[in-house]
Length: 444
Ligand code: PLP
Image (tube, rainbow, N blue to C red; front, side, top):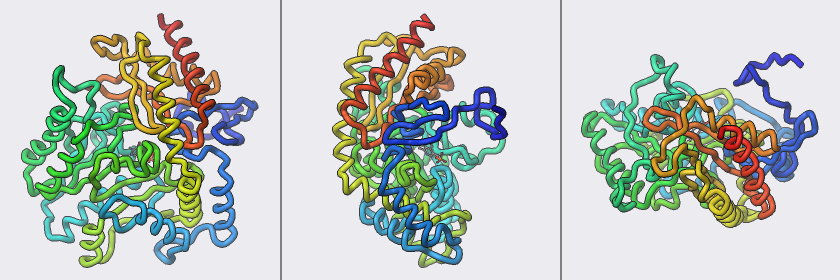
């Protein structure tokens, strides 16, 4: 059947999803798919959560949407109360948008406006990390350090500087301790600030646990403490991007809780609305809120659908459900089973270089050579082949190419819903093994 949708891949339009039950999606042909990645780490409650559906129905029956330039809503206010009550230290407000890229755009503008409000107009530069992804709108793409995603849009991007990621598997030197490695790469931030001019840097942006570009890469101990110290020393704002790794995905509500620091601004999305509605937010620290409130009193930014009442109602129900059903305990438990299962089955696989992650956020890095960690030739499109082979067997996994020294590498990301059982985890591993065997037997 001809499609008039401009799909991402116009050569092979995807099947139509017609229904969801638990962690499964069924397509128009009746085929079922086990969603082992929550789409893109989104659907943390699966696809048929009754409490979220009921909350959305109730909201729509009252009022679906009222423009935020005129009205607030109970759903928006209660969601903000809920998020602030459970936020990392120092967070005072929530600013609602419709997704991750919008959250990053808003946080970049808020950082800039903060410095205007406090009389430091020279602070305009943003520093981020190589091999990072912060969204696809132009500002978010500018701070992202993924060469493949940036390349063709380079002339449209704003200026941003990039330092090394914290990516021990690739960059830790032989004999270097975790702590020494973490300090070495964190100190690149200080060097970049000094090079740009200490009074001219507005913000540093980083994902606490890196998702899409590297496949669940957690920082080494002490890395983020040193980053926080450097930001404080030079008056630079720390923007933590928890769009993918946040809202319970790594076993704590916020991934940064495991590092013992907090950011000045923190972006959240994906798991916030669990996929039932498009919603994201910027968690804003007291000092930034105070500066704007006691300065111009007006954040000069906005979108038509920000604070959408039905989206807020869905997100509030999703967050309450996660707490009421104690699902973070399951994230930790099933996450360990998933990690153990992946290690057992693929720990010695000739093309698996690293297995890593936290909670139900696990990555498998694929390499052409385990000893040298050489990446596969990007022309072989290994990650796309794994995705296709898994999908054919009814498994949704999230294989992507990262950027390793400008060359794409391959990894597979698992981010199943928080409701997975031990049997589901075993099935994910079995289906993944079938897909791996299929690809590597065919590839030789
Ligand atoms: N930031 C991170 C860390 C992400 O992983 C993503 C999306 O994958 C984004 C931002 C952009 O979010 P969205 O696709 O909702 O615009």
